Structures are given as structure tokens and as C-alpha cells.
Image 1: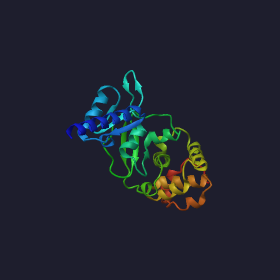
Image 2 (image 1 turned 135 degrees about the vertical axis):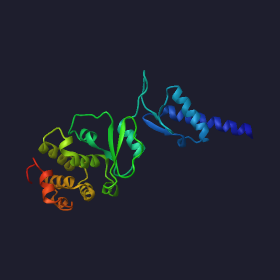
Image 3 (image 1 turned 90 degrees about the vertical axis):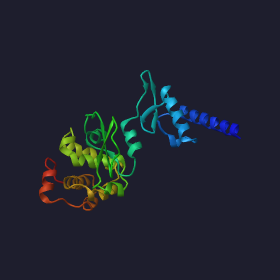
Image 4 (image 1 turned 120 degrees about the vertical axis):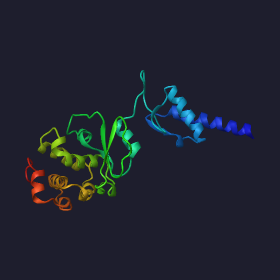
Length: 233
């Protein structure tokens, strides 16, 4: 019986090793391996030592592209999704503007916004807490839609283009279906006043005045400041 169990464990470990080595651009955790946790940990550590895996943080590993300098790290967005994936999460700050082609600046660490308590940031990813903007999670916004709300919030700090060009770009994303207009409008209720003002303007711009009316209006002074530089429409 002990021999049979030992053979079974070796078989399981070898099967897991093959699965890992055959994978590409994939995260691995000890729980992904059908063997004892201590055995799985030894296997993963051995593959890291051999350059077949990259250790990301405790219990998390990555198999991507091998280079002369070792295993290439995961893309920041892929890592962010793995660590904090869930409805309503997406790029923030300059990462959002860059993702929407509204800025050419690439931050040293990618910013990622999520609704709820963020996990510990990583060397390539910094998480931003958006707990009060729960509409993003309630309406299950996609990352592109979250990025749009983040840009509408940080508008003057983030866009490199003029405000008219930026609105045209966001309007194109709505008209093409890359941004779900009803969904983002519904989520807009929990966004700050300046964001809501710009979101209402965007809906008019994209030919959806019905959805603009569904977004709670900001007070007149806030709206006027938020829409400075934009043609009324």
C-alpha cells in the first residue's frame, strides 16, 4: 500500500509538471496541483529554480515567455486581474488614459481601481480603493468602462488631447460597442459630481440623451467647472 501511494504521488507530480511546462501566459497556485500542498510547493519551487516559473508572491507563480534573463513577468493588467479580479475593476489614473489612447504616458507602476478593500500592491501594480463607487461592481463594469469613468474623474490631469478630442474618442467607444452605454450610465450614479457631469455630456455626445437623463446631475457650479472647455450639446 505505501508503495502504491508513493507511485500515485509521483505520477500526480509528473502530470502536474507536464501541465505546467505545457502552459503559457498562465498563473499557477499550489491549489491548482492535485497533490499534497507541501508536495505542490516543492514542485513549484523546483520549477522556479530551473527557470521554468517566476515567483510572484507567496503562493502565486507565473509561466510566461522565457528570455535569456529568465522568465518574463506577467503584464501589469494580467497581474492586477489575477490579484483583484472581480466586477467593476479596471485601469485607473494614467493607466486608464493610456488604455483608452488619451495619453501616451506609461506610469512606472500600473494603477488599477477596484471596488472594495484592495490587496497589497505589487512592484508593477498599484491598487486604488474605489469602495464608494459601488455602482461599478453592481453593474459589473468591464475594465474599459472602468477606465472611462476614471478618465472622466481625473480629466484635466490625465488627458493629453484637448477635451473635445477626448470626448470624441470616448463617444466612438460607445458607438462601436466597446463601452456599454446603458451599463456605464447606470453605474454613474455613485460617481463624484464632476464625473457625473462629464458622463452626462458624453451620453449626449454619443447620441444617448435618454441615458444622460438617467445619470444624476451635479450641482450647477460643479457641472460648469467640470465641463469647462467643452462645447454644449
